[in-house]
Image (cartoon, rainbow, N blue to C red; front, side):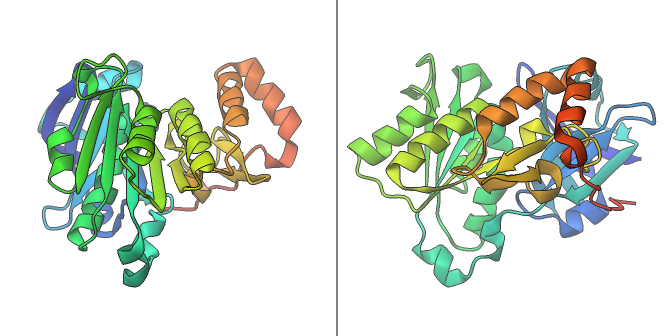
Length: 296
C-alpha cells in the first residue's frame, strides 16, 4: 500500500495528496506522471506529478473530482493508501536536458489553465532550484478555482493571475494575458509551456504561432490507460501518429492536431465510437505499451 501522509483541499473539487512512493520519488522528473489505483477493482487514473521530495520519499498528486473514481479518491484520508502507484511514466520535460548555456539565454513563460497549474509547478520549481527564472500565468474561470498561487510565487520570477469573469487578477483568459504581456508590456519570450484543458492549449498554440514563440503543450488530459495499451491518447503530431502516454506527454504545440484529438476523445467515450476508431485506425490504433514495471 502507498500511504497518504498529507491531504489538502485546494478548491471545491480539487485535492492535493502526498503519497509515500520511494521508487517514484527517487527517480521522477518534472513532466512525468504516475498511474494510481485505489484497489484491485479500481480504475487506472493517470496523474501528472505535481511535486516530489526525495528525502521524505513522497510524491505529490493533484486531482479534480470529476467521476466515480475521483470521488472515491477524495474520500481517502491521511493514513489510507493506494494499492498501485505506478511510475514515473512518460518523458520528462525537455528543459531537464538542456545545457546551462541554453537555459540561461531563454525567457520562459508558463501558461497554466485550471488544474494544469499542478504539472506546471514542478517545472518552474526545478528551474528555480537550478538558478533559472520563469514567468507564470495562472488562469481559471473564477477566483475560487485558482490553485497553488502562493506556492508558485515562491519559485517563479513573476506570477500573473487571470480569471475569465474578472473576479480575481487580470480579467481575461491566458491568451488575453499573453497579449497584454507581449503586446502592451513589451515582454519577450523564447518559449511558452502551456498546460491545461485541450481547448486552452489549442488557442494558446495558435496565438504563439502568430507571435513566433516556440510552444510546448502537455497532452496528459487525453490519457486513459497511461501505458499505450488502450489507444485512447493516440494523436497526430506533425503528421505522425503519437501516443501521449508513451511518446509524451509533452509535444510541440504548433504541430499537434488539436481538433483531431478532441474529436477523437469525444468518439472514444462510447463503445460504438471506440469500435469505429479501431476500424479506421487499424494497426495504429494502439501502441505496444511502455513496458514499465512501475514502483514495484
